[in-house]
Image 1 (spheres, one colour):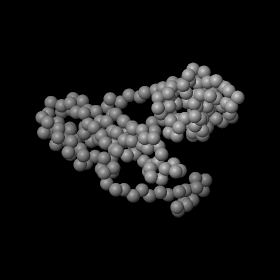
Image 2 (image 1 turned 30 degrees about the vertical axis):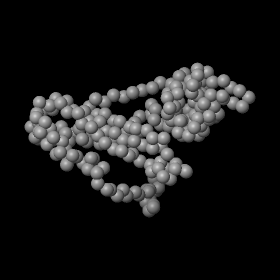
Image 3 (image 1 turned 90 degrees about the vertical axis):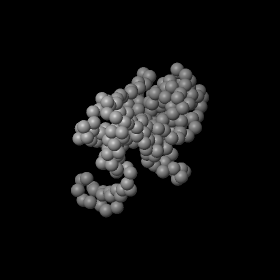
Image 4 (image 1 turned 60 degrees about the vertical axis):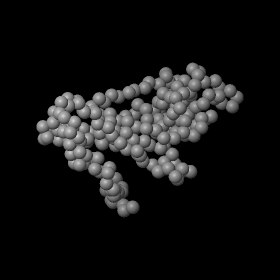
Length: 215
């Protein structure tokens, strides 16, 4: 299952979703408002100690002799990790961390790209005497949630299909804006970090003793 991320800077808005009233829920997390295929949340409650049960479909889930008859997604109420998918096929249960818990790490990554492009656009336009009436930068990427999961070795974890769009309003001629864009792409540090191969080094420390462990 692949989902797409869009981060818009300069016309940035935050969307929020509220879940239905909870029944005896004591954990930190709430159920996602809908499944990945758009089925709305019907009810949520602590199914077992430490487990958040999220039912999707009709208003009230019915309990039968073998348990819930509605499709449901179960999560660890302390960590938000998906623990079970009932009736749903693989990939239909959303990740709790996508909802009401702040931006995802992939969104922060794209926000860094759009922010850097916008910042360099502004300072470069000033240095080139190019007036800007408005500037919007929209960064895009996609993440396949199968990446890194057992049994899906062909899918690699990470953000793919990176792209960004720049929307400029200016009284300057088109040729001047194109020159500005070329200069921004030449010097924008975050953009160029994405464009060239990078080696990332890691160091592991035991926080209690500050002793470095080489891995």
